[in-house]
Image (cartoon, rainbow, N blue to C red; front, top):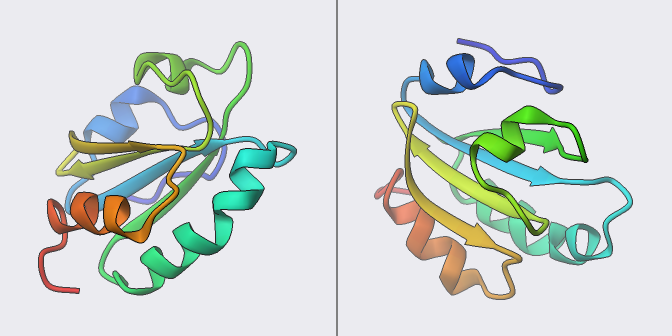
Length: 106
C-alpha cells in the first residue's frame, strides 16, 4: 500500500506489509538536518525497506499516536507493527541494530 508523504492515518500505517521506517521530524529541525547523512546512508544499505518521511508538528496526530517527543524519531515497522525505535540517532550502530530487526539481509 502506498502512503502519501503527508498525514497518513494510523490505520494506513497499521495496514502496511513488509519492512517500513517512519521518520518523524521537521524540515527546520537542526537535529534532523544533522542526522540526515547518517540516516540516508543507513537507508541506502537497506533498499528493501520503504522509508516514509513524516513532517511532524503540533497538532499532527500520527506522531502523537506513536508517542513521538523528539526529532528525528525513526519507527521501524514489520507488517505494520513497531519492532524498533531510534530517537536522535548519533551512530550507525544504533540504526544497524534497528534495521536488522526488519531487514536482516541488507
